[in-house]
Length: 458
Image (cartoon, rainbow, N blue to C red):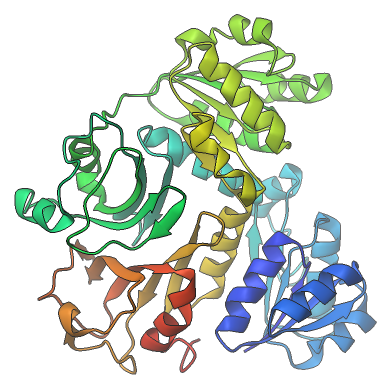
């Protein structure tokens, strides 16, 4: 498949990496020649330096015979015009655009994006994706990371193990015997900064950060086994009243359970806009790192603080200050993945990576049934891949124990029809089944071979 990706920032780069790795013909376009050079040197892609919305630039990028265009530049307007030019001049059939401004998103329910108006097939809103991720974190307060798979029937949980974890020093093989009815599997362990896929004889120790796949109905029991209590979040303080903070607050207000939220926003104009848009949320105009403002928001009585400004350092420091002031749970929005290792040392409970969230969302819309979702772990150290098993795949028709997965790969869940099951050695993988695999980065090419994604991919 021939794909043009407009924008070579973090989002565009990650999408190009995935699609080029699957042997698609990928061209990256960006007005910044240095970003284009970086992409062409690191990835198997072509690069064009220039403005993505210019017809002559798209012509040079091969738009005449392209199958898809993904407009992910930093400008909403450039992304929209790019899709229009791709449709009107070159007849590209599939167009995906990243749009950030909420007024454009409100119009998605009208006729704005119809083919005879502004032809965009899929609109991705990073703010809405991040707000959804934030709500998932709040729904599973005992985890530092969480993501849904298999149509919401399976969940990946990131759990930090404390001294009070009841199953410390227990081999994973023994856990399966102890909790035979539990539909959950430990697929990854981070110990002393190193992430790995565990063996059945590996034990769990205090300080470990583990990744567990669980059936959605067994999430609370799974967390309980690893020493985590699931307390309901009723009082939330949101630091940052921009698009993300406002989207989270609106989502919280729309829920049936009465959650009391307060918002702190430094910019007066943004604070007034948020106050006008919200009904029950109290909006305070001030600095989220100021202890007096935090005290005014009753941070010591809050169940959780969500720091979602557009500055990573502000989010980290505000989360730390809120914890110092007595808030039991802090979630921070982190754009720079190299800052993630600081989270544990600073006692920040969970983080949201907006770029990983956006990339996952775009990839989910690109794929037609084969690889259905990809979720990046840490600083691209590992990925969780949800894929449908093809008849051409070497794993089809074989029991799990006979499949030669690389050492860094574990199957976390398997869906037959609409039923999610915990895979065991005897479970037979059939054509049409959906599997979720935890894969260390170095093992991804071998997993792609086993899934046969490059043949009959779309």
